[in-house]
Length: 191
Image (cartoon, rainbow, N blue to C red):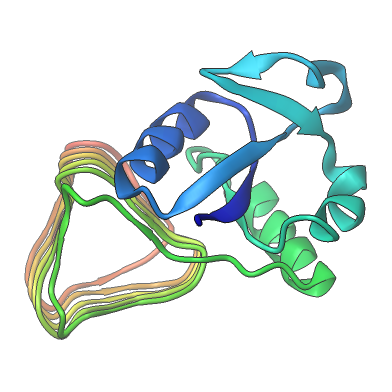
């Protein structure tokens, strides 16, 4: 029997995470938490069943949660929700698409989602509450700290350190052994 999971956030990023969870086939999605006005609406095939105020009540029936709010302009809501879920006692599993390749010599921390066609190479460490988005490449010996978003089709080359709370834009590429922080716009070359 599959473990139950609740998704926190019902926007566009939620659509992609639902697809990854269904493909991974480890969890049964019991519903989505979003703003009060959206309760009863559906996201793909799943109902919005609660708002943030109901999280403690939900925890009684479901101990797993994953944050399905994206991170573009700011990740402050993702960070706040992660802390709130942990304080309630939720388990925030690592979600990894079966279409991704994650080296057995890498480490992925809790609450991080690895999307389709991601490649995480040997001896890389990815922190908590990260989004490693579709087709991103994390090369060998990288460290991606907590609460980062590595966007679609971006390349983090060998030995790079991505500091906490960084947004690394789509198609951006880093030189090897760079230290990256804050906001990197799409298509950038980071030296």
